[in-house]
Each structure stands twice: as structure tokens, then as C-alpha cells.
View 1 (cartoon, rainbow, N blue to C red):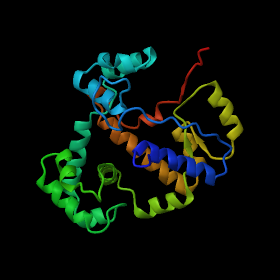
View 2: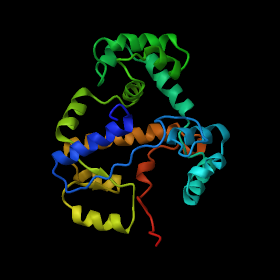
View 3: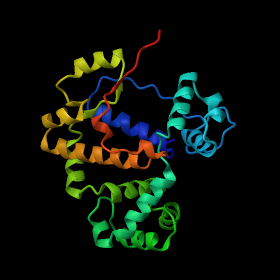
View 4: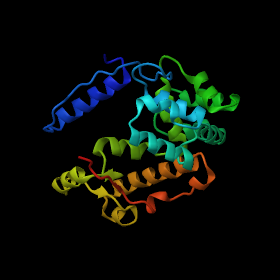
Length: 252
């Protein structure tokens, strides 16, 4: 079971909660179907399969059997707006950045160890695309998921010191994206345990120095993602400063 990515992630969540002595109960739900399966037609479809179907057809119609009516409407709305990541565009962005980085610069980033920076640099110099470069680097030792994270590191460029401090001290804030009435009640009870960021411009001042550095990385990731959105009018930067958390009504 622990050879499956989602089960391994669930195990790590459970272990972390037991370490923190959090009063939570676990309800294991074994996955139906294979992780990363990109085909439709089975009783259960993976998120990867749904995204690929939408990306190829430009519509969510083929995903109707697997989504609720509300989710289907939301997906169609996002597709119409072009407010979703174009992974081809993202891949080109990573590949172009890696044409500019030297092995020494790569070595200063997290996860580039054991001489991998040389193999990485050579692959991006010789390959014509992001996917092709990752395929040429991938081995049993270096999983595809790890290489994807390293690609993100080359764009975000966090320092090793920042990552080490963050792993040691943990997150310095929680970023609130959406909530409902139950969430609002929970936040009242959790007040004071961890700073909650709802408005970036004002809440940043209440964070620790490490928290402010983590938030900078957070905002940088958002700016990169929006630049990779499908339609040009969705690619404006600094969107975190203009959007408040969504409040979702609870239907009984």
C-alpha cells in the first residue's frame, strides 16, 4: 500500500498529526483506480485524467459522469475565462530559465546534490522541451515528481538557508483562500495559534521575519502561475493583493 503516492502522503499526514498529538480520528478511504491514470471510462477517474480531458477538448463535457453539477459549472466557467494553467507554457518558462542557469547556480538551490546539477544543465541545453529534458534526466533514483519540484525551484530560486529554516521551524502562517460558516467558527477557536493571512498587504506586517520570507516565496509562486494562465487577460501579476478569501454558503 505504501508504494502508492496518495497512500504514502496519507501516512505522512497521520504520522505528523500523531507527533503533534492532535485529537483527530482517521477515516482511511482506499483509492479506487491507479494513481495518475489518464484515461476515462472506468467507474472512477483520476484528477490527471479529468484535467487532460479538459485540456484536450477545451470543455468539461466528457467529465460530466465524474463531477457534481456545481463542479462541472465551475470548471466550464474557468475554461471559458482561460483562468487555468497552460502546462505547455509553464514548461517553456522552466526550460528557458534553465538555459540561463549555470551548474554553479543550480548547485545553490535545494535538492541539487550529488552532481545532479551537471546532468540537469546538460539535459536542458540539449533538449527541445521541458518534458524531453525531464525524461532524459529521470532514473529510478530520481523520480519524475522530484524532478518537477526541482524545475519549480529553478523558477522560484529559494535559498537553501530559507528551506532549511522552514523545515526546522515549520510554517509561520496559514493562508486562507476560502471558508464557510464552519470554517469561520473553527478559525475563531484557533485564533492565536498561527497567524492567518487573509489580506496580504496588511497581514504581512504581523508575521515573523521567517514568515515574511515564506510569504514572498508564496507571492512569487502566484505571479509565476498567473503568467502561465491560458488567456492573456488572466496573466496580470500581484493578484494576491486584489482578491479576498471566498465565502462559501452552506447548502442544507
